[in-house]
Image 1 (cartoon, one colour):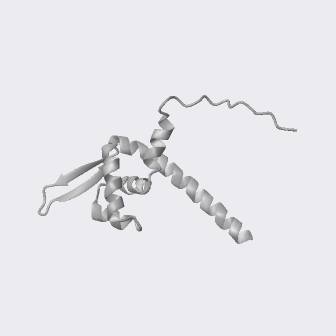
Image 2 (cartoon, rainbow, N blue to C red; image 1 turned 180 degrees about the vertical axis):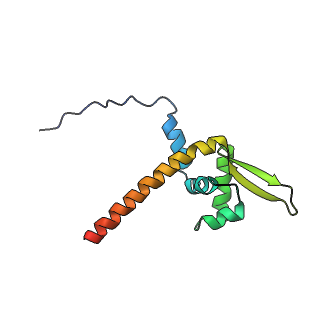
Image 3 (tube, rainbow, N blue to C red; image 1 turned 30 degrees about the vertical axis):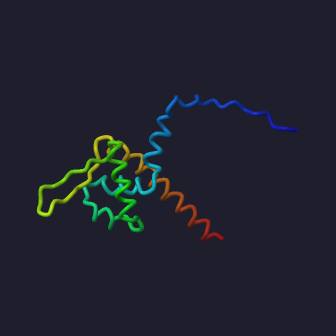
Length: 121
């Protein structure tokens, strides 16, 4: 006997779903890492590159440009000799930090459960 299809009680997302829009920002490769490392203070490119092992210079440059175009980070050229560039979170970028922190907290719990399961096996 086939099971009866239940109706979803959650309202369908509006056109241009805000959840999908937000996830497209923080779901991009390396974007959560960039937001994480900029959450404490502005960082230069070389500092971010050192903070995020495994990211190529090309990919980091691409993600920084994308996040800047979205208004999540700001790029500031410092009047030093030679000129240096700093990246910092904008107010909009700061609003993503609690979401990133929540994901990290769940990640810790998932990691602990996995370790406990491996230890019990």
